[in-house]
Length: 139
Length: 125
Image (cartoon, rainbow over all chains, first blue to last red; front, side):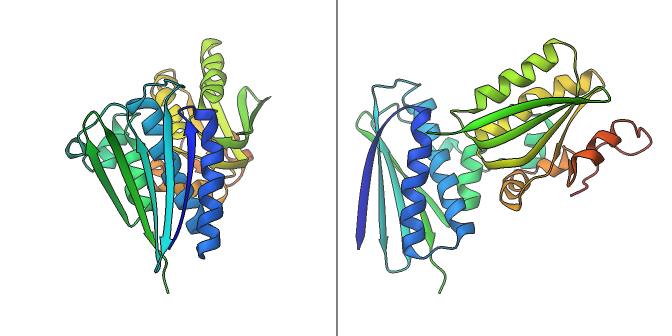
């Protein structure tokens, strides 16, 4: 198993560094450029949600991004200790309905689920939140 | 460091925004400001040329969502052009082709503003 972690400050200007870190790991693991792009976008969306919602743009906070790559499974864990949220409230929106009303937020969660094979959450209120984004390498 | 730039041109009273680089939550406010400036000066016929746009996240897509209703209320439109397949796929995943006209070439989008006989909500990509 290969595991790598970076820690970033909760600032949107760090998103490009996160995308580069994840892209490099996904490329090395053997994903196509198309899949590398999907993984980087999903991780960007997860980190953007943390910066905006869990930490409410507090730049003194930290986010840990860990990549586990083994046995055809590529997993990225995005961990913060900001405001907890209830994953049960995050439902799959009806995109046609959504677009018709020009709603702006919540697109990131939909994208994460569309781009990855699995999205899991582990929430320990007051302690930490973790989003796990998983993609399988096709044989 | 994200690199994102916006150019602005005008042709036949159509205002063309040229996006270059990476459009994410960090750089989206630049696009928001550019669109706000256009609307603030009552310019509602807008083409967004994505030829040099390397990347877009939902923060960038959200900016188009934020302005389209207001633009159309004033009989204008935001039309999108010249997307790479990678960028188009993100728009497509979120259903944008249902509500936005997306053209392969900028000139086709400009011409469309003067062709009122066609349905403005059809998909052209």
